[in-house]
Length: 206
Image (tube, rainbow, N blue to C red; front, side):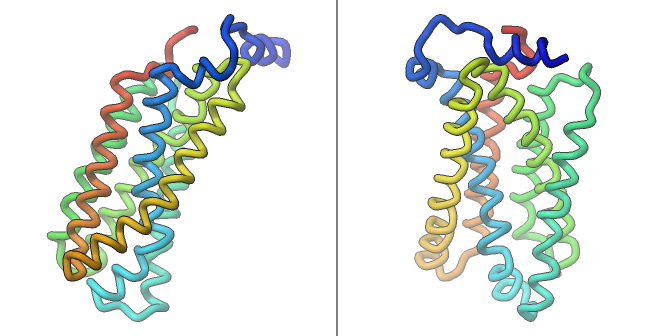
């Protein structure tokens, strides 16, 4: 078992690590993770504010509801890890992101709190189905440079963590707190991520 893992990691690309980062696979992998993180950072930054301003909840109640997307997102990652190997990871990622995009896009038109939060939780679940797939694809693409590919993808995700909250604030400031516009950008980011997976092959033998 350990020898098999060692052989996978030490596979020779025949090129220096910095040229590996110029491959289109790395660009698509990083872009899809940026899109994933763009949406995810709404859950950990602006979601309580949305619940208070748009749905009229008290801060304590908003904090409780804010746990739903994170909890269901974690469940999505676990479910993805237990999927049979016969299930194509590429199509799980595409389906997960497109489902997330649709669910987020309809939330602004949903009344009340419970239904919108159920939809947001499902969107988080579908989006997080892609998490184990993304990290596994770092191994498939990177081989002996797995750490370099993984850190590059993670860096772009963290960059989204800087960009997204600022963009959300700018949108709200310039649209008189139009939260629908914020969520439409999240939906668009999920569509971009889904599109990237048409060019990635997480199940391919390299």
